[in-house]
Image (cartoon, rainbow, N blue to C red; front, side, top):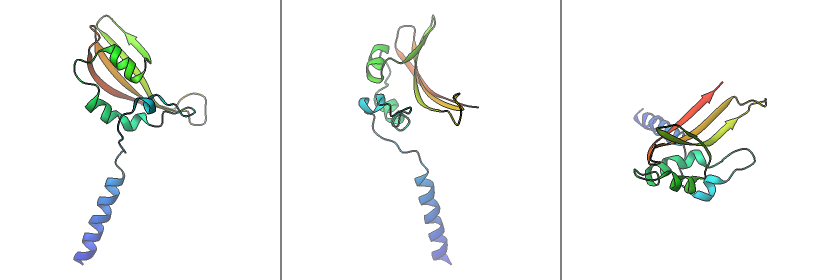
Amino acid sequence: MMKQLYTIIFLISILLISCELKQVKFEEKKWKLRNDIDYNYREFMIKDLKENYLKPGIKYKEVGKLLGENYNERSEDSIQLQYEIYTDFGTDIDPVETKTFIVNFNSDSIFVNTRIDHWSK
């Protein structure tokens, strides 16, 4: 009986570990690589990017050089870079789901924080 319990616990542990999002080291070339309509590596690089590259004090121009100068928004007190992680079009030409990595800067172009915007229809 005890052996069966350990086997069940082991199998559940393996299942939970295998469900974790695969993480890879950030590589500038792979970040910018678009395969047909998708960026295959971006979602898996975000953790490393946030932990090792997007540090307090980094400037807008440095991030733009590292990640590419993508779509940005500016207001009087902030700047924002937006990077597509993925867009799912389903069976239509209009998106049904999007995920975007947002990098925020203050008015002096100094990094403030990041977030991920996830939208679905």
